[in-house]
Length: 284
Image (cartoon, rainbow, N blue to C red; front, side, top):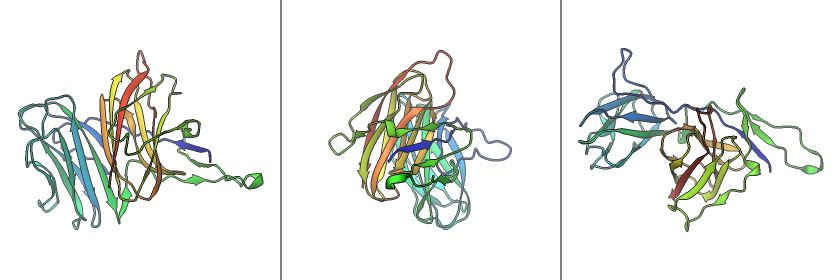
């Protein structure tokens, strides 16, 4: 089956710890955000609206080698001021998951650093009514052409007006398995956008897919997409311009999944082909 996906532009942007007149900086389920501590032992708070029946998971990782998250003060806090998730221990990464929530309203995602400071990224993933919930992308509308003669399976296209299609059918994906999980794989994206990379793996419903990418050269914005074959989008992020990118995704069904990487966003000045290493792991 020939697959063609249109990838929605999803901005990855920087938020500061400043509290604006209208309240804390807001994030959504599905966001990947870059933040920065500018002082030691600093609190950075973000706000997200959730409802009864939701769950939320927040993962974070530092840039560089020195920033550490302070023990006990990194948490997700309900509107009633009760803590629904907390990260304990001084570490370079964070992984906080709530149970099924019962309160409706604005929850606070709180970070605090140790004595070193600097930039970090964090990702927010949610479920609603037991299903993955992502506010950063509209619900795709499948367009199914008329059946082709000879009983061929029709091509299915997911489209958003004004955004070019990314065709993964021309890419021979690298098959991932237990032997090469957690092993960095080098890949390249060209300036003209022809260097699309893809990786495939078998997974079960509820497995946690971990993706870590580290740029080694170049300055292109990189888009990431994960879809369940044949044509179910699960995760989209980009254009990622940071030197590192990390996310964790709870997979919605049994079957084969494809991780795709491609050039995304406007070409920067003096655009250069981009090389990076991607590491994938799958946890039950």
